[in-house]
Image (cartoon, rainbow, N blue to C red; front, side):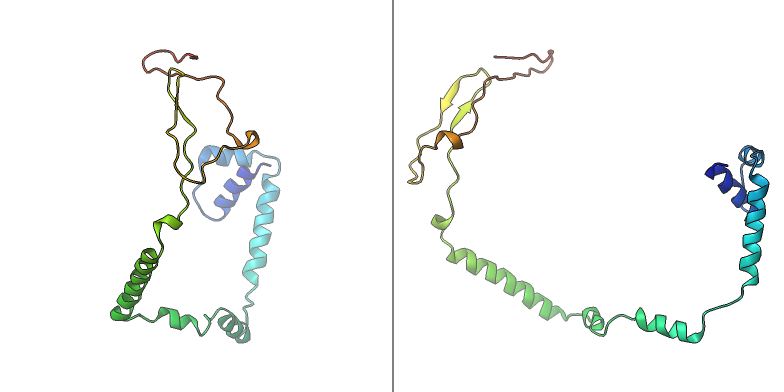
Length: 161
């Protein structure tokens, strides 16, 4: 018997609505009667068992799931002047550090090697005046473009030069 047949029979057994066609299909299965008997036995076992945890169990669970003592410190409201002072100190510190850091200490971006146009012509990049601009060894150079693809709106896209 498939799981959806079992779900349909279990829904019927629990008093939930079941689609008539699905119910007829589930009841036509060879194991349907055995499954309903199993559900009946399970319900009888669980309804006759009225055991409940004792008070010691509930006390232990309350202690185990109680929030820690420091948790209350996080829930206390922070006075508005203290929060404003903390934000002002953070902004002032950021401005102070940015004023102390000269722009010359920041690394310069690398110059572009060349600009490639859609027609395939190359325009060399302007020469760099930065002292750290040196020629890269061949192993560190970017790969050379061997084929340029050109896409034109309104036409089929075709391979260019």
